[in-house]
Structure formats: structure tokens, C-alpha cells
Image (cartoon, rainbow, N blue to C red; front, side, top):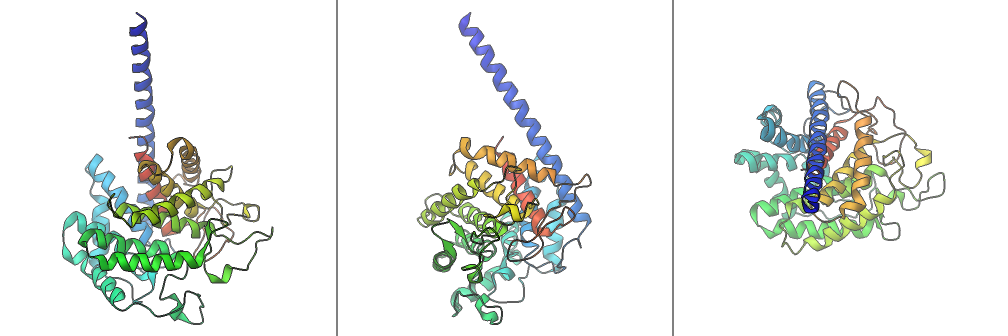
Length: 369
């Protein structure tokens, strides 16, 4: 009798957990669909109209993740079709600037579309761009100086670590050609050594911020800047096979950055524009929060981060993100294009914020499956 009672209790607990998880999955899908549909219906909501611009790259990445769920679970090809239309009318090209990391960023989603559809036209332009850069590496300093635009030819600002490195990781995974891996490792580690503060365990945006201070006297560490980095690390790790020897450096950096960022989450669930002076920037900031929630959820799903330690931060962060969505699906509180902490208001939105939201939602949903 006692054994039967224990079995019934365990069975009831399992069904209760399944029901909760199923509801969470449905709620997450509903809010992601609303956000994705609003963005598709408002194609000119961002500051930059160029469909190959870096601001669109995270949107396409998030939309690829969402499209996979919509097709698999609901047989809805709407979102893949939307991505294909964008790719085809731009001939799957890259941006105009040969070296600049921002101009190859859209290649990440084009590679993903190639993996799904197998059409070489989808991957040829990004491969051609990457081949040229690898074979003709930029010869310039990492000290960014906007009066000398050649200083942007390398990954001299931390956002670049989201834009370009995953392209080379994916191409290496796709082709097995070590030239992509060697270039990735060399350039990434150079940027890491230059921009990473090993005491604070955070990345400076670029060299201009090495000596700057916030109003409270703390160093300037930009929320979205560090969010770009950890989300980019997640993309690199996703591309690598489990036995890839280069993983160790990126895994260790990912975990170290995750440990630091989880300490800096505000009680409201957000990561704010300034990581070390949130009181000067008290407004919610969804682009930083979205990318960090995405990365932490990925870390749990991949077994890199302890679930019990990081899940509360992910759940709190996701709840905060959902709270920034209007009833029509518009995501607000996205800091505009910039390089450092700035004030944010609820009506502000941008493509990359929506992309971060969709990436975060897709990984969050996996936590309960």
C-alpha cells in the first residue's frame, strides 16, 4: 500500500510538471509569434533600412530559430519564406565593406538557410567574402579610431565578436577547412587580450573606454556590448563539434562571462545599459537582456552552466522581456544604435532587439522540453 501511494504521488508530480512545462511552451510560442509577426508587418521600424545591415543580422538569426519551431510544430513555413524572400532579393550578398565585421554578419543566417535548403547560391557570397579576408588579413592596430576607418578592419570593438566570428566557426564546421578556424582563433584571441578586463571579467566596448568612468566612479562596461560577446560565444560553441579542440578557450570564456553577468542582473530582471552603474541608467534595456538570457539558457541546455544556479536568472530575465512587449507585439525598451550606455524609453525598438528576443525565447522554450 505504501509503495503504491509513493508511486501515485510521483506520477501526479510528473503530470503536474508536464502540464506546467507544456503551458510555458505554449505561452512562449504565443509571445514569440506576436513579436515576430509585428516585426514582419513593420519592416521599416528600425533606424537603418538596408536589409544587409548588421542591425538586421540578429533579427534574421532569431527568425531562423523561430522559423524552425513554427515549421516543426505547426507546419508553418511563413517565416522561412520571409527569410528566403529577403535573401533572394539581395542575392544572399554581404555588405559593401570588405573587412568590417558588421558587413559579414548577415552571412550567419544565410549559412543556416544553406544548411536547410542546400542551394549553394545561399552560401557562396559569404564564403567568397570570408575567403578573401582570410587570405588577405588586415594589417592594422586594434586601437579603434574613427578618424582612421582602417582601424575597424579588425575586431577592435566588442560588438564585432558577435558579428563576424560565428561566420568563420560555421564555415569551418561546414567545410572542415582549418583556414577558417585558424583565422577565427587568431583574431578572436587578439581582441580578447586587448578588450577583456581580467579583473572585472567584462569586455570594454573599445579602446576609448579604457580610462573612462561612470558617474559613480566605476569603469564603463556597456550592457549590450557584453551581451553581444556572450551571445556570439554561444553561436561559436553551437557551430563546433563536441570534440573540437578549440572549444576549450571559448567554453572557459563563456562560463567566466556568464558567472560575472549573472551577478549583475538587476532585481527587475533586466541587465541595464551600464553594467556597473545601473542607477544612472535605471530604464529597462531589452537588447542586452535578450542576448544574455539567450546565452544563459543555451549554457544550461548545453550542460555548460548549472541549471539550479542559472535558471532563476533566466526565468526572471525572460519575464522582464515579456513585460516589454506591447499587446500588438511591439518590443520596447531597446537601446538605439550606439557604443556605450544611453537612456532608453519604452517606445524605442530596433531589429536587433527583436532578434535577441526571438533567440532568447527559442532557447528558453527548450529548457522545459
